[in-house]
Image 1 (cartoon, rainbow, N blue to C red):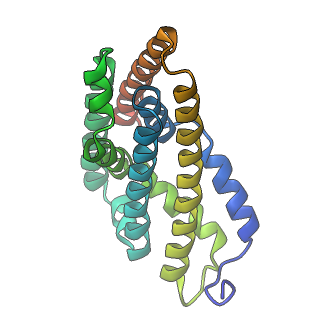
Image 2 (cartoon, rainbow, N blue to C red):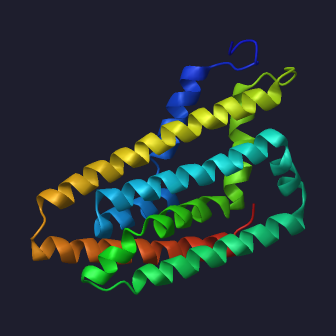
Length: 212
């Protein structure tokens, strides 16, 4: 089936994708920050939101819309500034997090955590450009079913990445639960979230001033 779609070197694709998913970035920071304050449930909701945002880019790439984004300077700039503003706004919010039950309840609000995860990924135009650059390396250039091949590889990349972030959230939440009641651990979780917030501000600024 894969050969009929023009997909080749699938083991290499999976290995490279997993290495990329383990590279620290906005996605892992978002999951880690929510796990640190809200526990396993918040971290896993964050991971699922990131995965949904990734599927958005996969769909655009399969339909060819990401190519339009890559070709249009105006479209790229508009999405880039929207993504940068959102990252900075969310980072500032994480920096302002205070200790206590109110902060924990906010962190585990299912809709807020999930949809912020979606937007963190969906508003980053460089994710779209990444798919356009990475996936075609594993698809025959003159295949008759390139859109299907694009969609299948994108789905596989997203599933693997989501499993990685879900595992992170599960292990981090498990550690938090075992150390529950320790005041120092609670403070550490708060500062981890604030650190993630600071990194989001840096990533937002970097996205705003960076090129393609």
